[in-house]
Image (cartoon, rainbow, N blue to C red; front, side, top):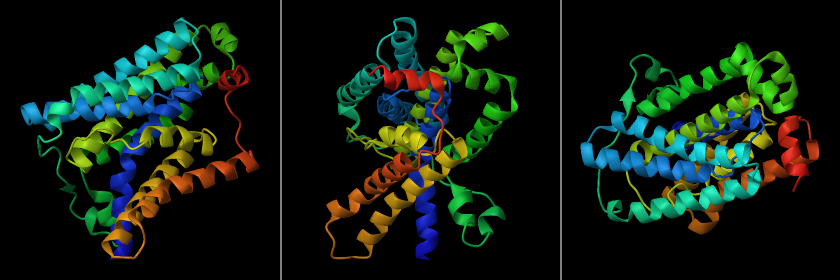
Length: 301
């Protein structure tokens, strides 16, 4: 019973991070790091919640959240690609912009309730022992995330678009020689990253917690960026990392429910400590090759 609850919690809590990881993987593969994913998530969470609260239509909230996140991504892309601004500084500014903007615009929705998405159980598949409930008794955005993850792997490694995108992150001169436009590819990648991060925020507010509070993203966007680096820009490994983070989130809640005499603040630290340990291990192992264009960003700092 505890194992099943842990797995279900891992998927529920990890989906928002998973979608952020998808978006940031695409962006970084094209040579642009976006530390503003936290702001994109917050914007997506708020606007999705506002749409749900005002219209009662959660499916309408999905495109609205994605548009809001895409605009945040476009803002980041304009400054770092067209204006050659520092990617790290711009990303941090974008993060605080998103958090501040949502805190201001969302102040009247803190006490407003909305149903949002409810769980949709898939017959037969949900009856699979142990993993059935965890994977197939979830909300529609979680099901959509499965398709996005699979599509992301196919896009990056099995399509011409993915080949050009990865080449853009390695050497833009090669892309020019091929006849493609690396600037356009970077714009598309960063905007797509913002949209997917915002979708992760929407899942958090209208499908997982069904509430809106200031700062509700809880650094999940930053964790998503870290997981992409830990996974050495391998999307499959990053996806697993997102669910591990979700499992750690679920574990601390399960331990609190069990009434263990441990400070709740210490339990809340568990997921973030695991990420720090993973970052330390990845820095020692150094088995991943950073995209060459992305490496220039860090060398310029």
